[in-house]
Image 1 (cartoon, rainbow, N blue to C red):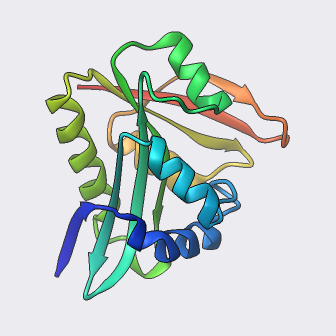
Image 2 (cartoon, rainbow, N blue to C red):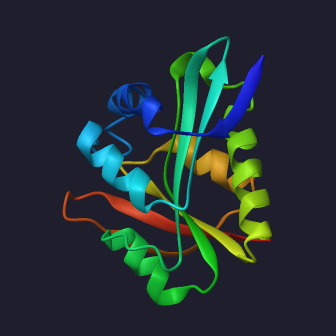
Length: 161
């Protein structure tokens, strides 16, 4: 049975391991980095299935003290938003609606906080086709793009609610 609930620092090892599996489309995050991000995040959720963590989402909201160029890009352009720093679903958890459930929880939380939109970036070059399709199906629209120091190009997208 799938459960989604707020993460705690007790989930650090599971979250770091999941992130490591998909580091090519997220960014590196060891236990120390996760603990820092967790401390400054607005909301961090885990998805658990049969006692195993199969996904997580980490968010920041406007006003959080997050030093990140993508977050800053949105912060310069948006008002009353929540930013998806990363969402990761395990390989065996994909295709079961876990990402949709995590986003539904984030959107519900954001609306309770009086926020108006959700922001996220996804890789355009090289493309992260799964993420691009996932966000398009959920009504995200591109409002710009950024070329990162790594050479990647990301699509900066928002969904209003």
